[in-house]
Image 1 (tube, one colour):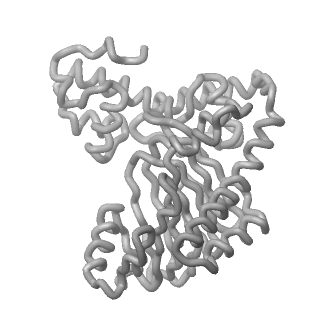
Image 2 (tube, one colour; image 1 turned 60 degrees about the horizontal axis):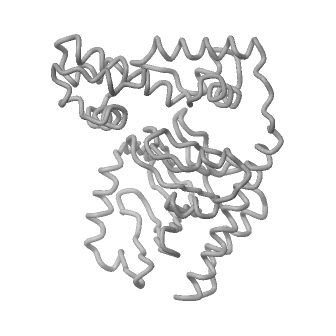
Length: 332
């Protein structure tokens, strides 16, 4: 039987399980160890603060049932992950992680997504989060202007999925089997974490270098991008996923992402959010509909997610709109 959990429910399970001190141990001031709640299966995760602004999670889990995890829209740090075993399936927002696919994401706002963990599958890997200000220090003076995509505040984050290499897997195994303890352990893991980040960044930067100067978009591609934009505008309540949208207009999702940014100056998610906010503003000002009704009409099932997106866009909450105009705050 499949178990469906929200992120809040999963955290509550860990909180309840944490009361058993034999299963959840603070190893030292920098590292903690916790077991997977028994209702989910067997396994553990270790969380290590390897440097100020850098957190490492090592996970080794085997679920005894299919688990579906629903993650809401949330603020996101710079993150990268590599699996050494198993696969994590997702809805259309992300591809299947594991196998040949790794994950590298900039900071910003993460869209809601669904992750699926299959019964009896052994999922082992590492995930690292870095404060964007720390990464920015490393990027100062970089010739790659695209690196600003990794550092965002109130805009949708950018995600990349570099192909795993044997060298990456070697570093992951070295992290999983670190031979040191305490101070030397942190020093060792710091080096390995940034080595892994460099390996994931390298093919992305190499590809960007080859794209300079970027070629002009072909007329038929431009036409398809306008078609994609029109589809999003018409289907605010139930928009297609990125992959579905690309298939509908007859281009690859990669061409859709890059071409949309080049032609319209924003991401697909950014455009969708902008149109949703414009429409919701109009509805709140010009109708007697409730905030919940407006949220549903522009594609938000969760009222809290709508309110957060609205405040990011306009600087005030939907409940503060009332009858007063906020058109001076919109981005028209």
